[in-house]
Structure formats: structure tokens, C-alpha cells
Length: 110
Figure 1 (tube, one colour):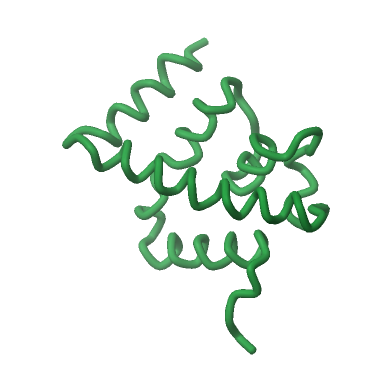
Figure 2 (cartoon, helix red, strand yellow):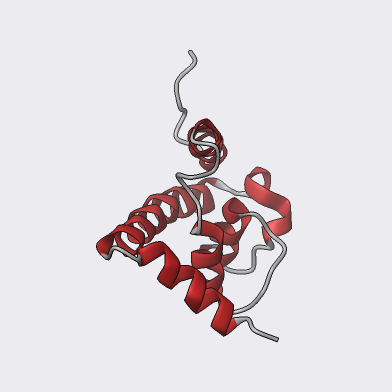
């Protein structure tokens, strides 16, 4: 009754709650890491960046509410793949987080 139903929106809510419980430290750098994957600046939050990256023709502005069943499945798979890849990059080296921010800063320097 109160569990996750497999939807992208519920997983995003769960992961966001976990991040809030760590005062933002769990996902620190995740948005910047995703922007490096996207290759351009965006004002979207990380959850919308994921849909923008993996759902063809989707605008991150509609969020998870506009996803059909196949897009939802794709977004859920991408969420966990991206989280795993991000955590690996962040934790692979002692300075992994610093490297992410350095790459972000140099890529998007004005």
C-alpha cells in the first residue's frame, strides 16, 4: 500500500527523500554529472535531465507525469544506471567529486 509502484515518479520521490535525509550530500554533484552527459546547460532538476537524456522528443519540463508505459520503463532503468555510474565516478577516486565539479566548471565556463 505504501511501497513503490515501479513508476519513475515514485522512484524519484524516494531517491529525493533519501537525498534530503542526508542534507543533500547523497546526490551532491549528480545534477552536474548529468549536465556533462547532456553536453549543455539546462535549468532542469536531475530527474527531468534524466528524462531529457533518455526519452526521445521528451522535454524535461513535463517531468514524469507525461511518460507513457515504455518511456516510464526506460526512465526507471536510466535512473538506476545513471545513479550507479555517478556513484562509481564519484567514489572511484579519492577526489572523484572534485573531478566532477572541475569537469563541469571547465566545460561550462563562460
